[in-house]
Amino acid sequence: MLALIKDDDWLQEAAERVYERRKDELWIERTTLIELMLVSYREGWNVLRTVTAARSLVEIRDDTEDILAAASYVQDDGFTPLDALHLVTSGDDPIVSSESDYDGHSERVKLEDR
Image 1: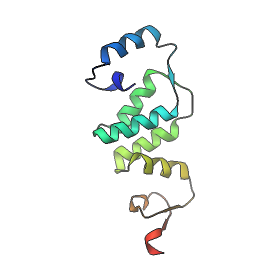
Image 2 (image 1 turned 90 degrees about the horizontal axis):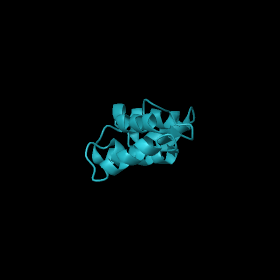
Image 3 (image 1 turned 45 degrees about the vertical axis):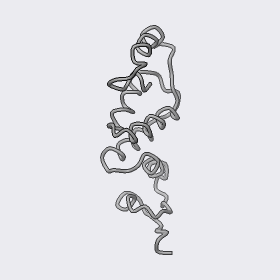
Image 4 (image 1 turned 30 degrees about the horizontal axis):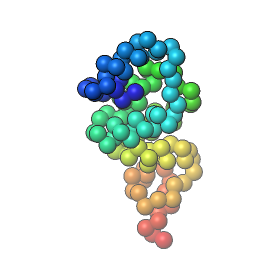
């Protein structure tokens, strides 16, 4: 997936050939999208664009709406990928954390005040 999405990758041509021959057979699951979020965050790429691009290329065999929502928090609000996933998966439940990034997005039980 990275070789297909990146602007320049040493495996890009090979990945494109495989993709063209087998695109109807290829699929990924949510863990791959999480990995793409982490790599794109580390590399300073647009996290939301990376996740969206992967979703448009191949079938995904899991529900991924929460990952797309988390990618939006990374891109728009400066969350780290894992903090964004925690935020999205917590739903309406409070988050126990010292991370002030959650403030304004979720109820937070502040560890630093305990």
